[in-house]
Image 1 (cartoon, rainbow, N blue to C red):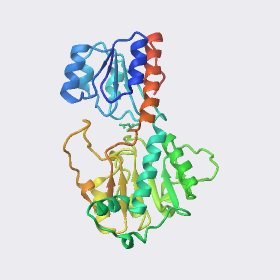
Image 2 (image 1 turned 135 degrees about the vertical axis):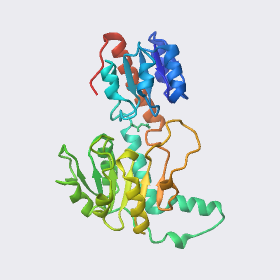
Image 3 (image 1 turned 90 degrees about the vertical axis):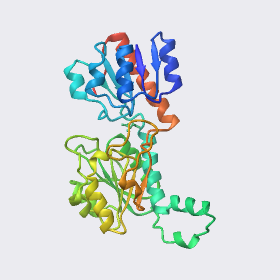
Image 4 (image 1 turned 180 degrees about the vertical axis):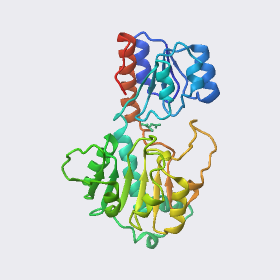
Length: 312
Ligand code: MLT
């Protein structure tokens, strides 16, 4: 049986059911309710997105064989514990890359043109054309990409279409037309007007955006994060915002963000006037949902038919 416990494409569910698999779909499971449901249903395959798969979830189900993350990162799953219990973990890298790249560009444009302030002032019946006359524009400015995986490459393509210069640093260099490869992160930070983060949440990247990193950025640079809140040292970032009046942060992710889809939750960073935030919606488009759905179906079918999955 396959338990899908996060928002999932109806088409994907239909395909699995038509293929003869028993599917239970409950998009609102997390924490205790997930442990309970997993205990009751004993699924063989568990499909999750924001929902955290902890040791308690894994221990609640002796029948569990595969956990599929309906997204790129596997940091919401206790992968080490799953491996200890011989449970395979699969993900869907690249399948939501376009959606996340589009959001990164959205945050860049929003900050550059102050669209949220425009929107709010109009709602208050205020016409403030003069207030926004000093926006920079993107043409000719330098976008620095930290990490050059699936999402970052899509951001680069879009930035080039906006006639921006693009420089990137990644441990793996990929020869890509129109993009400069730096030999270090410092080299990127020195020249970039906008820095966009595209690294996974790993022990080596946790807190990598700290006071030292921020101090190396240009004084009026913009930082964009559609990756993970955990890669930011949030205390250092809050201080940097206080001491640098021209610094802006656009983020789709925050450290400790809730795994439930709707709840009241306030984070000190998102209250700052120079922080543009969204609710970890990078992958939340119908297009991405459909592509992820197809990939989860492919992985589930492969496992059900052969007992194997592709390596993460
Ligand atoms: C991902 O890891 O691909 C995204 O963060 C998925 C999500 O929206 O949670």
